[in-house]
Length: 324
Image (cartoon, rainbow, N blue to C red; front, side, top):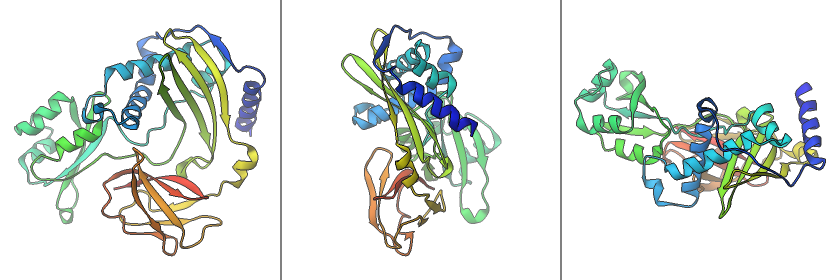
């Protein structure tokens, strides 16, 4: 109850006449503060290059120009002497909840391969040049080795980088190794706060969204703050982004299992007919599957690539699901 009252107070305070305030700020901060926003800047960069289908999507290293641009915008808001900026940066301490990892992935391969045996023993370099060159170039190390039962026919190893990377093209490179079964980009269960941003000719538009309410299944409620950051680090609070209480009451609670899924998903929700229509989108907005459920069950998903997807049920809800 205390949290709800605090939120309502802050929302009321934000709405009562603090819009369109421009203030000078700074895009500089100590390394300890920059470290707090490195993942946010990386995710904003990743989303930006894929949304615009830039050639950078084929590169494993994220482009420094965009990383610096988004980092400067985040630090400008962090330093801005505005009550709304203080709310997102210090009171709620909003950071982007990751749908997927830009630091690690899981490689599954034949456990009899010599390079897998070397990784299991912690021996790097492994003597397999194709792998060793990738691990050296992208600063990869073994995070965990999974020795599955013999019935699996393979073992898995989680590789983690010392920096944030574009894991999709890295996964394609790793798929070329001998004995590979698959490479899993992985994903995170649940939902949480988000940061979105877009680059314009003379400013960055950045949105901070706080989220709450059944977040393990997909947060029901969101409240946001929008800022414009000029290239000289001036910050302007634009508006609040919120959902009316009446609308929130109408949002149905949706239950789905299993999640992560492999071949099918079972859905239960109020007002949901057994044979509902659905659409499944990947992280870059491409339609991956669509059709009609059968008895609250979506099946035939076994051929989808492992990763994170958005499941859209018209007039009900959009949910994040993970394919393993």
